[in-house]
Image (tube, rainbow, N blue to C red):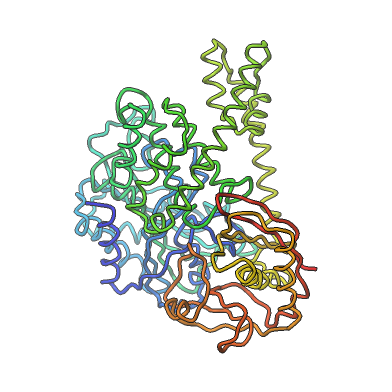
Length: 602
C-alpha cells in the first residue's frame, strides 16, 4: 500500500466519522516565537484545546508536515526523521477515550489490514497527581486486545505535553496521559543489550510506535498543580512513514515508497548497495532524510543562511552533502539536486517550486565545496606540520569553515593519527557552548516577534505590505515575497529579483512607502475564499498554505483604487499614518535570484 493511499484512507475514515479536514500549518510560522518550525499538528490547535471555539467544530482531522531538528542525531536509525508527516485527529470536548481507541484500532486493523497479533498498546501507570488509567485499560480489553499486549508505563513514557512529563510543564502548559500503539516486527530478534525481556518501549528495533492518542485534559497552574480542563480533549498523532513501514512489515522505514526511489538513485550514483555489508547505511538514510526536509523547507521560501531557519536548512543540506563525500561520490550540486528531484513525485509544493529549489541546492553545494577545500587545505597543512589536532582546533575548523568533525576524524585516521575520546569530548563541549549561545540569541530575536503584537511590530508588519507594493511598482510585477521576519527593531523582507537594487531604486521604494504613510491611507480587511481573493488581485505568499477562508487586507480605498491588497493573518494598524515613517537600512543577496532588505521605523 502506497503512502498516498494511506493518507487518503486516513482522511476518508475520520471524515466518515464526523471529522472536518483542516488545512495544515506551514513548516515555518513567523507568528509563533516558541519554535523555529511546526513540529506537531496540535500546535495550531492549542487555543482550542484550552476551550476556544473552532470555526469548523469539535471534530477535526488533517495531515501535518513537521520538522524536528532535535532528532537529527538519531536519523540514522530505523525510525527517526528530521521531516515527517503526522496523521492527526482531534476531539475538542466532544468524544473521548472509548470512541478514540475504538476508531484508531479499527483504522489500523481493518482499513490498513495490520495483524492484531502484531500490535501492542501502552497505558499510563499513574502517579500522585494523576491516577492510573484503568479506563483505557478496560477499553482495550473490551476491544479485544489481550492483557499480555497491554503495557503500563510511567509519566516518562505515557504522558504527553510539549514540555514533557508533568514536573517539567511550565505554568499554562496543557497535557495529559496517553495510550500508544506499537507494531511488532516478528522477524527482528530482540537485542539482549536492552535487557532480558523485550517490550514495546525497548530501543532494539523490534517494536515501532505507530500512533499515540493523547487525552489532553490537564493544565499546569501557578501553584504547580495540575487542574482538569473544562473540556476533555483527544489529540492523536500517527507518523505516516512509520505506519507505511508497518503496512509493509519492514523494520527499516527507509524501504517505503517515499524513500525507495531516492535510495536507488544514491546506489546508482555511488556504486554502493543499500542494506549490504558496506556499513554505509547510515549515510544513505541521512542523505534521504535531510534532502527531503531541505526541499520541503525550500518549497516554503526558506533560504540557506547563517541564522535561525536558514541555518537549520544549511545544516541539513551540508550534512547530506558530507555523507555523499563519505560514500565516495563527491558533493556536486548536480548530483544532489538529481537525487532530491525524486521528491517532486510526492510533494506538489516541491514540484511547483522546483526551479527555485534546484537553484538554491546547487548554490549551497558550490559554497560547501569551497568551504571543504579550504578546510582540507588547513587541516592537511596542520597534519603535515606536526601540529596538535585537538578538540579546540577541530571545533574552530567546524565553526569557521563548516568542516564536519567526522571528516576531520577520517583524515586523521588516514594519516595514522587518533582523535581521542578526550578530544572528542572537548569538541562537544565547545559545540555545546556555541549551541547555547545561538539559542540565547534566537530567543532574543524572537522576543519582540510578531506574536507579541506590540505597537512596533504591528507598525512594521503593516509596513511589509507597503514595501511589497512599492517594490512591485518601482521594479516590476515579477517581484514576489519569498519570506519575512519581524522584530520590534526591524523588518526583514525576502523577494525575487535578479540583482541588487541601485541607490536610486532604494530611494524610490523608500520615498513611495513614506508617501503612502503621509497620505494616512485606511487599512481594512475582508474575509473571503482564496479564489475570490486572487480574483480581486490580492497578493499571497507563494508557498503558504491557506484554509477555505482567508483575510484580505487592503491599504487604500476598498473599492477599485487601492495601493496594496494581500492575504494575511497578522496584526495591522488602522491607518498608515500610525506607522510614522520607514527607512531601508540595508540589502543583501541571499540566494539565486533572491534579495533581502531590512527596514526600520524612523
